Image 1 (cartoon, rainbow over the protein chains, first blue to last red):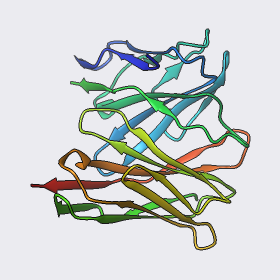
Image 2: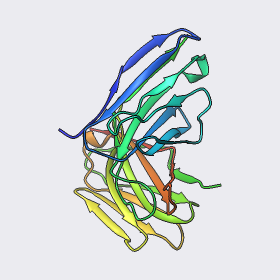
Image 3: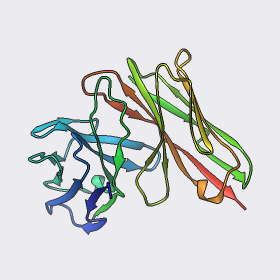
Length: 116
Length: 113
């Protein structure tokens, strides 16, 4: 089954304790992206990757890191989490992105992070 | 600055009724407009995708329209069902190398029996 898998689905942790949210897709998609969703603000892009070893900042990248060492995985790293990073996070992938691409994004089911 | 505005913010209708959700955008250059459905606790799922040359696209009881001149889109839901209760998100992408997408804040639809 074609899917985007995020882990963990829920996490409660404390300020400053490094954490990683994993994202994996099995559709051989080139494009992957991370979003956060907060009440009243909609989905905001954190980082995206056009292909392996190609990553770029989205609208709200501060406090986050990503890597794209292989096509299927796109982990989101919070080196020193803070309470303002408490949010619902979504990973998404699509076959391609950019000019001429009309591909839908496939989203994972989300990771709810609470930073105390 | 590219923006996508959706209205209404929330809507309550009775099962079996029709409804229409609106999306206005200022994204330029325009590539495509997508409507997603997001159930509570789940990730968004694509309903329709429309390019500049398409002015209507259907997916079952969902019909999206696009007026690229006025930069407006609508999502019409026919004969609503309880399972249509969800958030509906309008997303507009740029026709650039990165194809950046701008998301609307969504319309929360509640269908009551």
